[in-house]
Structure formats: structure tokens, C-alpha cells
Image (cartoon, one colour):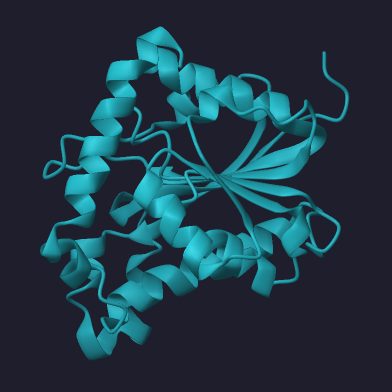
Length: 239
């Protein structure tokens, strides 16, 4: 392991272990809550639209990596949209999450490890998903190293599929919002196509039966949107 990252890896593993064992988290993200469902639906619809607009659709021929894959839900979603399972791979730091992913989706390829040390060959993947990855890495050197490795394993003409907080969470010191300037710093060679999504979750969860009407209206107010979603395109010809 990269020496400067050892403490950060331990911190991340500890934070996610505590997060997974917190019963309040399951209540917060209960899929029966209309606001939570609206958040997921909006994100999935926007992802599909972005992929279509930028030429990453259909998914069938694409090789896709999910960094910070958790229990594999994103890869399973991509498979349901047409990606071939043999073209999908996921990597995560947390052994328990990888074990659960392997249990849920035994036909997909999951690795437990540090994304800084991914040993995929250069230019392996067309898409690399990074969902709430960099907001979880507080060590700047490690964040830069992960970004460099992602860029290395991604083909020219490929893209990072980005979804992450832009605001700090005052109730969670283990994450830090990633501003647009930081995204550009992490991926200086990228052509970013980012938009604001995800209505402030505590607000979304309070909308109740009015969610279908109010969520789309409130989500048009930039200040109330907590995440950047988009593609960081890798030029086909590198300067």
C-alpha cells in the first residue's frame, strides 16, 4: 500500500463500518419514502440521458469499472440497462461490502482493494463510475493518486461517470464536499459536462404525497441541489 495512504484507508474503513452499523442510516434511506425514490429516479434518468447524449449508449460494447462499488448495485443497474456482465468490474476498500456484492451478483467481477493500486492495464475501460468516492477521501495525496489511476485505466474517448456531494455535511465529518474547482484539479485533462442534481435529501424526505409535484419544482433551484452529476470526458487525442 502507498505509505501516505495507510492511515486514510484505515479511517475510511472505520467510517464505513460505523455507517453500515448505524440503524438510523437504513431509516433515512428507506426506499418506501417518496423523496428517496425521487432522488434515485432523477439520478437514473439523468445518467441515461447523459450517456446517450455523449455517445455512451448502448452500453453493450462498453467496458465499465465502478470505483467504490459498495455492494454492487450500480453495476447491476448498468447490466439491467444492457451492459454485458463480462465487461463489468467493481473495486471497493471495504471487505464486507465486496463480500456482499459477490453474494448478490456472483456473475460479476469484484475486487477488494485500494483504487490507487488497481492493476488493470492502461486504457482498459470506456467508463469509470465514481459515485461519492472523492468526498470520502479526505487525504489530498490519496485523492490525487486515485484520480491518476482512474485516468490511466480509462481509454482515450472514455469518461468518468461522476456523482458526488458539492456541499460539506455538517453531521458527517468523514466526508467533504467536492467543488467544481477540485474536480478540475483532480482531472485536469478532462472535458467536464456536469449538472446539479439531488434535492437536499432531508427536504426531499419531507415532501410526502406531494413529492411528484414538488420535487421537480424544487430541484430546479440550484442552491437546493447537493450533488454534481456528469461525465468527465477523456480526449481521444492526448496533448
